[in-house]
Image (cartoon, rainbow, N blue to C red; front, side):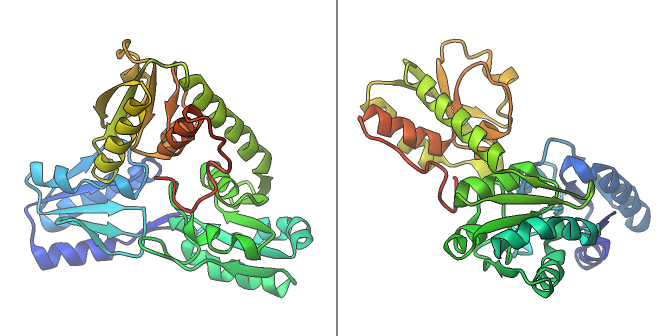
Length: 333
């Protein structure tokens, strides 16, 4: 069951007395957000606008949209971080999953005990469980380390593009346990740290070794890089979402590719998907600077769509240099 910190929302509304409120949240809790929108309107006689575009992470805040919609406050729900506010209008609201890990932890013990020293990581909805899980494993004889938070990250928390809390303890652990049901985040930990990684799924009560999946994904990512070598024209995609406008990175990649004889065209998109790219028939391959997840989440693209890290590898290959450990770093953007 997902619990949204409604009282924080109500307190801000009472304090600021807005006329219009914007809500945005990931798809998984959108039903609850709709219920919340009706509740806000009934309790406070305030107009609510729910942003129904896809919301994948903390980079999908809608501060600018709130201004265009003439809203006084935007509540970003579900991607809990170490900060309470972002931008001029956006207030971050916790959405906590109260699912218990007791059963999957018992299932995981024979596996985790083999590695003796385990790093614990999770995502926002389960971050409140990490201390309890750590205590359980320690009582069972497993040494547990939790990486310290940095920037937006709380202790033990990872994003889809930031694995700092895992990366900083990688040399001191023998494997990682990821708490939750997100193979993408678990695979990211495995790639960033080059350590065996197990996903502890509290819903199906299963322990999944994502290490082979990470190896397979790495091979596919490298294959996409080599396919892009033959491209004469490359589109460098700039994300139009607030947290994805990495203009400096996009300009640098464009300059580096042009120095090596590629024709480069800038493209701007809110949503980077095959449907939007298929119309760009003059482009042989793409580099997107918006989010590494786009290039790695299994989306079926007709042409190579590289992340910024893959673009770095492409440039090294064009220079006749080898590249190793393409994803072994704390931040992927």
